[in-house]
Length: 330
Image (cartoon, rainbow, N blue to C red; front, side):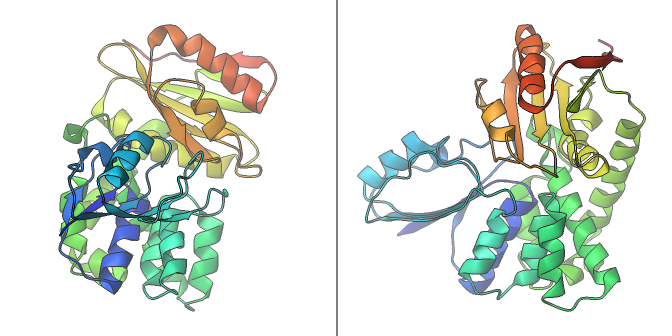
């Protein structure tokens, strides 16, 4: 029987899978990609005598492929924290899905495994910008402050690598990154011994510094919107810049948009950390929108719908434009 591991290419997806395979080693075929590539289940061949583990991608987005696989006899286990919609009842489907704002897929796997590889769950939680939850997990292991900071840096760097509009934007493909770290039971050893970690950290800090020099394009009473140009660094930094803004101003919402070659936008939205709800609902109002309650995105926002998005953002998180700022150069 062939087994497929299908996982989001960000820190949460990678760390969730790594915990599972440390606890339950299994030869599998890997299916993953950039963070915005969430319709991954359709890449699994529809055939009998197969099994699938799915991690950190929305069931609702992958519903058609999921039902087709189940119809043809596949056995599937599903771990996720994104909007799921109605969860199918099927004897060959086991789901571990929770959509509260303070949980991520790595934490769901950690719970499933009874904390066997909790340090990797901490990395995944930090990567998903769940700092409070990550800190709580870290306290359960009595880590030193320097070790906690290393896990935070690792999580943010792994997450940074997943952003981009194509694989060409990434420093390393998520499947290769997972293959590199799978030899390490201890993330602190991985961070200390693998040059790719230092490379990702340096690139992340460089790109974030560029983004921090920008002004918002629109400031609302409840949040701000940034429009970034069509550059590789801007596409890579989109998500971690949104996370940075959320931590810096936890009472406000934030959206970071990058312009594509066709003039359309890719969108990352963060609800206020102080009230982390509404991001997924906002993004699902637009085609290719998905995510979780506190953090969501839109894969392709047509240029002529930018104003619609701004109005929807304002309605979701605040009232009235207060200031307009820079717009991205062509």
